[in-house]
Length: 270
Ligand SMILES: N[C@@H](CCC[C@H](N)C(=O)O)C(=O)O
Image 1 (cartoon, rainbow, N blue to C red):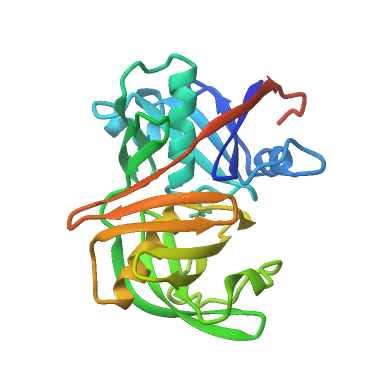
Image 2: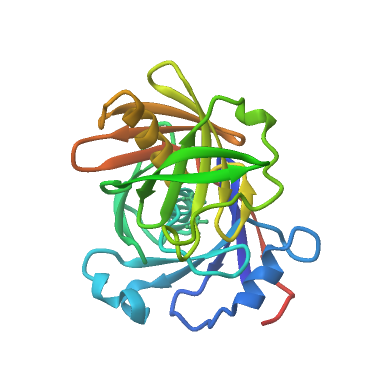
């Protein structure tokens, strides 16, 4: 099986072109190839399939030719991945599977519009974030209150006073399983002024990653919320780089770099 490797602000993915939707990826196989010692190593897998041939999203075939089938590093399925969509778009362009500068990608969380910027960055229309209220995460014995934001996938974005660089994110943070029965992506951030945040993230199914696109938007929403705002432009600094988030009344945008760094033949079998 052919694979490629790419990343968006160091949120890294294995890309599996499966254009006719023939592969049946097991969770164990995904976990095996994402293992950083015995596999290729990645935060997740982006399987590329034709929307019309993928039963679970075939109803989106009129709006988007390609389906991003996203899997976390533990093999679990997720609805959306913001950096994943950007890297997926970069792959479609590089592989000549699309020639347009603006196109749509189908995900389990809905159809996402993508645009290539003149500087090569890729912007995704992430849709309208849905704010559900507050909940609590616990990290290293400390409890942090945050905002529950739905970006197609679940997030708890917590503004904290302690410097995020000092957090130990080697272990699963605690969270309210009554509020998040299928797990949650937890962002911890330090607001800097009125339009910047420094963020770390512990992703559902992948552990601490160096960036998370849906998490960056959730962080911008939570940061804006602190000052009673719902719109504005935010710079979100993650461990692996910098993302720009624009919050509008009806939608949100995520922008940043996305690159393909390698391709090869996978020797590991299902
Ligand atoms: N890294 C992603 C989010 C990937 C999915 C997430 N771990 C989940 O389970 O919801 C991003 O860039 O948004």
